[in-house]
Length: 273
Ligand code: MN
Ligand code: MN
Image 1 (cartoon, rainbow, N blue to C red):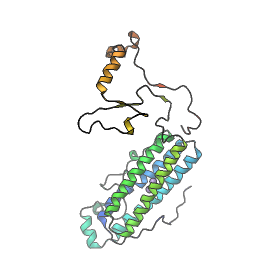
Image 2 (cartoon, rainbow, N blue to C red; image 1 turned 135 degrees about the vertical axis):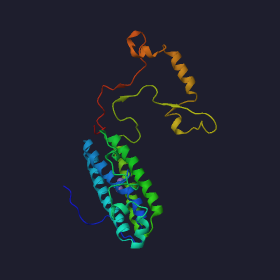
Image 3 (tube, rainbow, N blue to C red; image 1 turned 45 degrees about the vertical axis):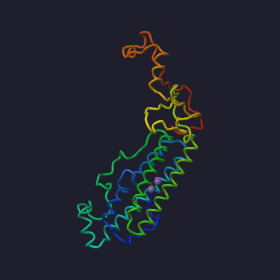
Image 4 (cartoon, rainbow, N blue to C red; image 1 turned 30 degrees about the vertical axis):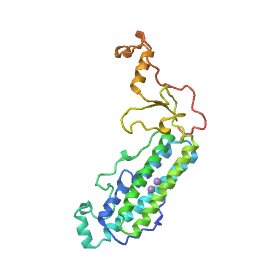
């Protein structure tokens, strides 16, 4: 059941209406990183998991994102409707509002229609929660840019609140990932990785092209400084493997080790499907 209360999650009080800025705001209404995308993504994802706590969280945050959509709609409305005729005339000449009229429309800042393909959702709770951390980063980055252009304090205050909540959501998704052992462990399905899982291939050389850091060092990673040499050694240590043999592994050489799904079910702490 959905009930709408006409109470805003933050004040919307535009003092310097600017239709050109309203056009930028459309990015958070009908754009990739926008509030509709967030709301429908988390709502849809909530039906992918049996974890009751995470389902409840996804539905709470998804519903909150609809409240954000409401704030963006009102900001766009005030930045278009309340602009003086002179400002409107000047701004409308270069914005899509000249054709569509005042108020929000389900398009992004360049006038492209909202698209269901913006929704990043799949069949596994860890996959979904990771997508959400990235989605919140995208929303936060858009808000950072909008705040730079915001023409008055009323707009800035509303945007700061919406941006702050995206930070909160990021933390919630990261805590949820920890709960299902998905924050530190890249594996979450049934995959039994092969022996390349901890190799870092140094695929570049030249000035600054052999940088080292935790992302390519022990204990997590084995650094392959010369990947060509590494491949040649690999080929020398196994029988030569031609394309023809690849088509007919029974002809003599066994295929190189392939990814085998684990036969055991996932451990019980891994919630979801
Ligand atoms: Mn939001
Ligand atoms: Mn959010």
